[in-house]
Structures are given as C-alpha cells and as structure tokens.
Image 1 (cartoon, one colour):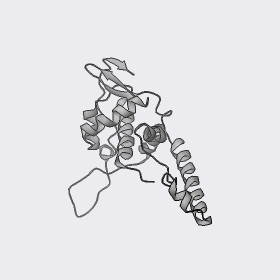
Image 2 (tube, helix red, strand yellow):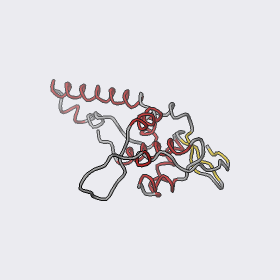
Image 3 (cartoon, one colour):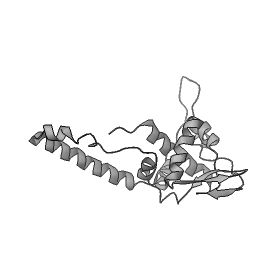
Length: 175
C-alpha cells in the first residue's frame, strides 16, 4: 500500500475547506495558496470529491465549495475513496501469482496483508474530518521564521492560522 500525493492532497484540501468555511463557500484559489497545491490539481481533486458527494459547489459571486455533509460525517476513508486512492495492501496478490505460489508462506503472507487492509480501512473509517480539526486545535505549529541562533516560543497568532476571512454566502448550490 502506498498513499500517493493525490490522497494526501485531497485530505489536506478537505481539512483546509473544513477549517476555513464556517458554512460559507471557499474558493479553490484560497486553498491552493494556503496549502501550496496547484490550482489545476485541486480542480481535478474537487471534481472527484463533488462526484463522490463529499463537497458541493456554489456558483456565482462569493461561490466556491462547501462540505456536502457535516465534518463529523465525512471520514478520511470517504475522501480517499472519492479520489480513487487504493488503500489495499494486498491488491497485488491475485491471479497468476496466487496460482503459481501455492505455498504455506504465500497464504500466510496473503492473509496477513489482507487483515492489515481490513484494519487500515477500519481506522480510516473511524477518523472524521471533524476529529482531525478538533485535534489540530490542540496542536500549536510554530510559524516559519528566518534562521535565528535561538528558537522562540510561538505567539498566539503564530500558530496554525485556522482563522480567515468570512465571505458572504452568495450563489446557488450545485450537486
């Protein structure tokens, strides 16, 4: 199993949307700037997220994207599934390999990795965007500073930066 940048970026973008929306649409350009992810790539990801019913698009002035469901109803697994991320560590153990490797060791390792896949899916299914957002509020991340001889403790406005401008909700919701 290998979680690709597609899955990592989708989760980061959804967390950004969750923390910055306050129920109002968020433009992809804003997410792109904050997360340093290509706008073109975000457009592709959000098309998949919209098709997977994780987000809704809002047209018109003040438009952007909003969560399609509550942040506590969207799991990390939902996000990864929407963008087509395969989290099965036993996905390659099929077909001719299984026919040619009919040994005890093959079956032990196959069962082990299938069980690992079950545990991973369960873990990803039990972690919601809301869980991660609440966890982020507990963690202070120091702001990036110019190299200095000694490190200083971050001030309250040098933490995660989960604030942001609230825009007027204008436009119609597309599903």
